[in-house]
Amino acid sequence: MRTNRVREIWNAGGNVVNGWLASSSSYSAEIMASLDFDSVGVDLQHGMIDFDQALPILQAISVQPATPLARIPWNDPVWIMKVLDAGALGLICPMVNTAAEAEHLVQAMRYPPHGFRSFASVRGPLYMGPDYAKNANDTVIAFAMIETRTALDNIAEIVSVEGLDAIYIGPSDLALGIGHPPAPDPTEREVLEAIEHVRRTAVDAGVVPCIHTAGGDHAKRCFEQGFRLCTIANDVSLMRKAATAEIALARK
Image: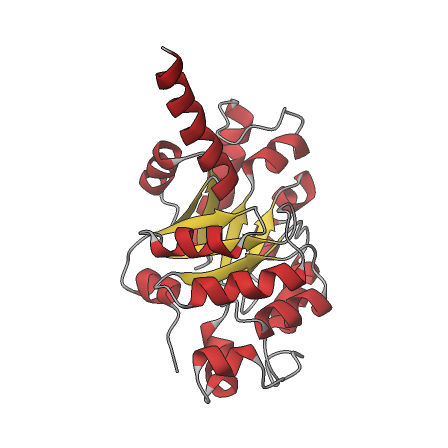
């Protein structure tokens, strides 16, 4: 069976640089996955992507070295099982607010006796190998997104859930949740303190801290802070940023 590169990097003590796809183009996915990202996430929550588009995107990623991840729209077993069956090796679940919701995510991602995921011999075994069912529970990664005041209040209980591998902070939603404007790279002291509290609580529980960042410089600062996976913006914002810079040069 193939291995999950993200887990290998973490087990070796390294950090993961994650790409992010908001567009529905499998060509864009292929380009992003061919770069030096350790993993690439497919955004089915806020990206312009539905399941029929996610499948060829995951296929495009899987022929490159990057590990395919996905953010599902909600903590729904239908989405969880279908996206895992399509070949994602980690799922980022939005708006996990309680330990019970984290446990629900973990259970839906694991085959019995550790969960209630249903088996289907589709892309998982095709992509990962014939022993996929035997090893999937230890291979796929469960990320719970921490984005609200409620999640912040319950963070110690959330990270204590057995089988939860990682937490993933969405800075803009977390800022909104505690009464500040959304900011991809926040500067408000209360938001920064909340982010550090979540990170430290996760580390103390043996859960990997991850975060969405506004770009490479922000990611570097987060790695220095102790985060172990940083997502760098997304394909659309990177294209916009590069195009804006080139247009400005041309108009000088």
